[in-house]
Length: 83
Image (cartoon, rainbow, N blue to C red):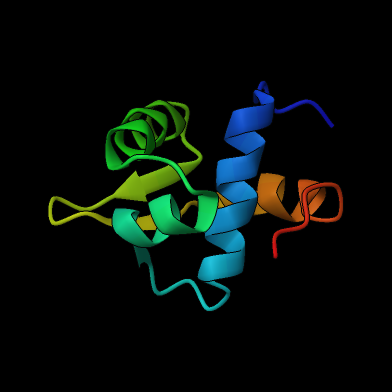
């Protein structure tokens, strides 16, 4: 299944999926902490993933997976397990 995602993109999508199993949305700071990366790094990747239709970001920073993003995250979840 080719989604045109980099390994980093897959890592972000699966982390969002794990942090937000009910689809209520998460804040970028929670994602930064989970992945142990900086907030600016999260911002850059979130913008890229949003441009490609994998997620949506509200003005106030809440991040949601789109159906496309959830499908990709589900596909890769077993390959990229998070603690």
